[in-house]
Image 1 (tube, rainbow, N blue to C red):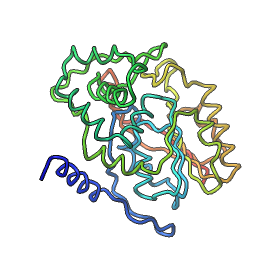
Image 2: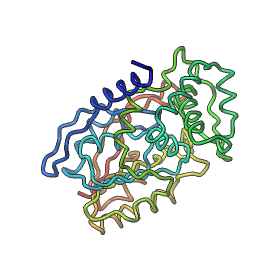
Image 3: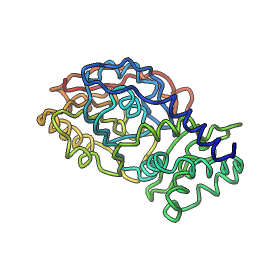
Length: 304
């Protein structure tokens, strides 16, 4: 058997192991909380899925997630409900490009990441960091993004006011840059999803009354000026949080089911006094000061 056939056989076996069950709108599937990953992402929801799943609706026919981030919630929703329509978006162009490449160019992406893994060093990291992603093709751009994310300090994604990635080298002995199984599963799960760069308020403009929308925005700081990272060159502060609350209320009036995660602050709770405010315990591991990593309260707000 030649190498090409071996690769195809291996790919087929991986796909068979991750296929989701046939969707029945009248049945809620008990789904384990294991989801694939492709990046480290501050505020990612993978560890919170057992808590967040308690607040999910019984049925999801159409799903919108305008702050896709690391994708844990989206992957879980698709596996559990297999929605007929899936719309995923984010304002971070690097993130969206990486998801689209994982979905459509999995093999080519893994080939480049293997080369990066073999070349990994502090010098190579800074060489990759200094590259202008705009000058790379989409596959190279996705590979650079994932490589820097998996080998940068503490898994941060942070850009300066000019939009340039500025996270220092992370001193990992043997960083795990990618998992073929996770990439194959993500590619399979997203095969019918619509993925785009978009503002949150535009991303949900076509949501219907039967749709479910999950908002996981940049969290409001517990203390002013204490945002630990910036995902894009813009900010997401009071004005943006207020705009998000307006969009939430508009979706509620349109008959959509809406759920939102954010920090447990008076400001945030004051924006959603007409809705159900629940609390969950979250472990936050991405912090430059290890003594400040630990459990904190977060709110989960729903209109149902």
